[in-house]
Image (cartoon, rainbow, N blue to C red; front, side, top):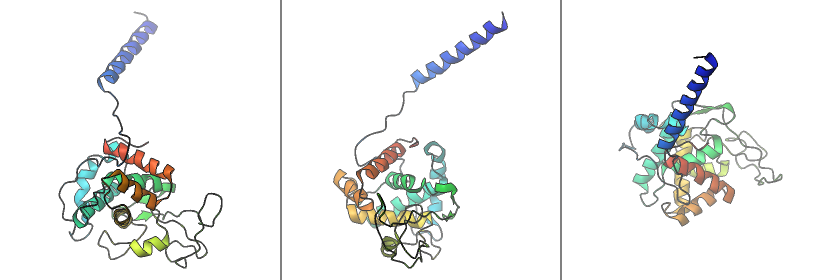
Length: 242
């Protein structure tokens, strides 16, 4: 058989095999609407365990990090924050998928601008937003922390993987990894802080109204809410958001 004909046959067979596989594996539907699904269930853990309690979720996170496109440490942080709230505020019902949706929009799970999330949760280099100076499309927030948290003594800037402004961080920030520091640049601290804030602002996040109110309190933008919802919904069915 001539080489060209052999090559054509090989290509045709490969194409047919691919088409057959595609037919057998229908695409996964990502649900619309709010609230998004809560995703893979968390295993039981001791949320009060000494040290970085989120490490208990390492196997759970590793089983899905590649499929979701989320780093293991970030995924542990999202799961741990949801587990803490399930214990401390069971009426909230926040899912780790919502926290992952926010983390994805705000900082690509702590990797924006080439940043890296260390095993203990610290994001390096730190992630800072633009000066909130009232420019086009930007809120105006004069400095509230003397540059202590955000490094800017003139205007406030959003900080860390969950992009808190200093004033909000001073009120809501919490140490989630047991290192004795309340650090906006640690994904454990930032994620649990976000969960606490969302539950306070939204109440019952298993309802459409509660979830909507929580997200609008976090960022008063319908576009933002849609972006978080889309990501969280994708994670809820085990597929990456982008």
